[in-house]
Image (cartoon, rainbow over all chains, first blue to last red; front, side, top):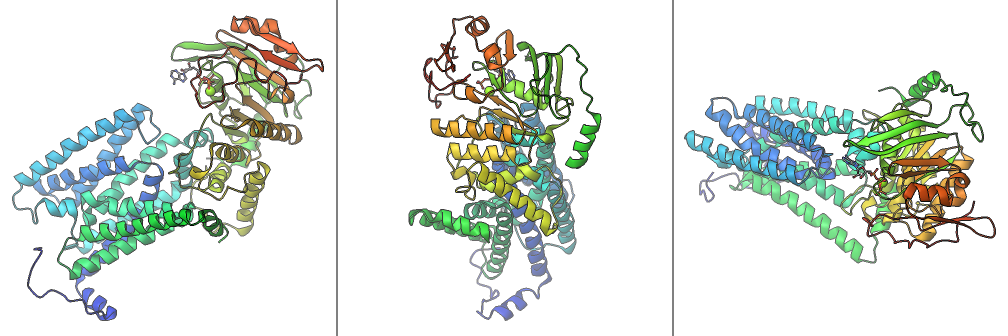
Length: 308
Length: 314
Ligand SMILES: Nc1ncnc2c1ncn2[C@@H]1O[C@H](COP(=O)(O)OP(=O)(O)OP(=O)(O)O)[C@@H](O)[C@H]1O
Ligand SMILES: [Mg+2]
């Protein structure tokens, strides 16, 4: 897409109903909204745990790895989807193995993060090489790095839905022990919660969720859906249930608003989604700062919330 | 994973009291005559080094025991052995009539020096609640209202017991160290454990709160017949509540009632430096000159060797 295309694009009319109807008359837009919804829900739920466990660096690495994965798959003649999933999950397993050997309970030590960073740099460079080798890639590296909503096929939506359902089901099954292990690993271990196994399972799920999100937001902007909504939610509330719900709603809102804006404005989708997410975060932060400033009324607010 | 109740029943079915006719009798026999803790000639090795050895211990229900010793001697390691996280290198260890690790659902555990930083945005009640059912798999899909209410009530009850109601609904990262510690004690208590393993619970508490928490633990111990094993740094503030003490030192250990163990000769032998035990006119004990390893924990109010000489009873 060229930034200043003078060709008559769709025009926002302020008549919401007809606007949406017009937008959804294109199957590719319907697919984009469907895929966006799936990815937003899965990313926000995973992101809640990522933020709680302070594994944003691991998440970042896994998402970066999607770039050489997608580029390599295209170079070898496969669909990029396979590249996303196989490399993200592989990276997650490797990070888990490093953490295991280092004895870290998940967040990892300096050694782990240095090694992860090293591997990450190399993989990014490989991805760049693959792109250079494969001349005919539509849109060049931008699409993989910063996302697109054009050309999402129905079968791609189905893959996203299937993988997303598996990830959410697995999270529902392990959710409570995972929360326990994330907040209080020592006591959880003493209670018989398999803290290490959970941390490996979590990373594998993270790989799958990241591969999903990367296909919409691009691999560099996965955090727009995975970290920002969850961080915003945790700024607002300390209740796990409310936090998860809020994160999902925020991610959904950012994705759909972003898609709508990108449909009418010829600028990248990733920018819009990230901007909406970021605006929400800023609002929440300043709201909280205001509350603390105004006679420390934050405690009553949280108490009220608790009885709600 | 077995349901906790089923597990408890199973454990109860298997508890065969270790036949030791010659063993010293318990001060008051436990209800089912099985000692809550039984160690015989226990030793532990970490990274090829023996930390302590020859620990004999037999503790019944409702007893308050202190594990004492200088930094790095292996007090926390002993708690880990009791939890089954680390095997004993020698000797025999039985916890609640089973092998260590088999009865952990009946143990409340408070690890040493845990604190949540300000970025931990989860409420105190949620942390306590995790202690109740955090190890269950799956989501409670619309659980029956009664069960849910009972769980919430239990959490509120135990939070009130430790006096943390005022800040339990704040994110735990925003609570002070002492407030966090109280919530964590509530977490350890919430499942009505039969054994409490507390690793320096009065760490990061000021003196009034320290004695309040110790009194609270002692009350729970004696009223609800819960055995308490408390790792402590300084014996004097807790001495009035103690039924037994275990002194760990490099290469040896001594255990028994405070009167038996806290004597000048025993402590001097254990530590290899002169330690004096004073008896005040009203019969209370005070340990003076107990060696302290170079303080790793700068935040601790450094108790001078003879500080707090008065507040101890025998
Ligand atoms: N995983 C490990 N590998 C090697 N050494 C260890 C390990 N864990 C503990 N140690 C060593 O075992 C010794 C006992 O540690 P422990 O934590 O039990 O001491 P402690 O008595 O609780 O001390 P403190 O009063 O400081 O809490 C220490 O010297 C420690 O360095
Ligand atoms: Mg210790």
